[in-house]
Length: 112
Image 1 (tube, rainbow, N blue to C red):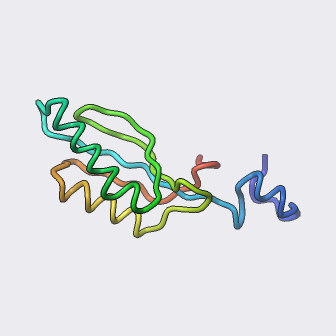
Image 2 (image 1 turned 45 degrees about the horizontal axis):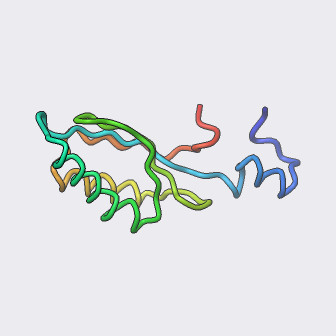
């Protein structure tokens, strides 16, 4: 499907999430200290959600134990911003995560 076609109705652009309805997100990865126990891990993830994900109305889908990776996008229709990327990266770095990697923003529906 050609995602950059010019003659689509507003309704179709919205259904396809293209043009003004494009949604941007970013990938994130980080490492926690080796030997972290379950309670420490739960506390870290709970704090991550409470302090950076939920206040910014973001969503996180990912997994890990000491090495985490996932995608971050908005909870509602819309796009993440550079400020969201910076906030996530800063929070992870400031709270003991190492090897923090945050991708550039990309189209979460039509990524290549």
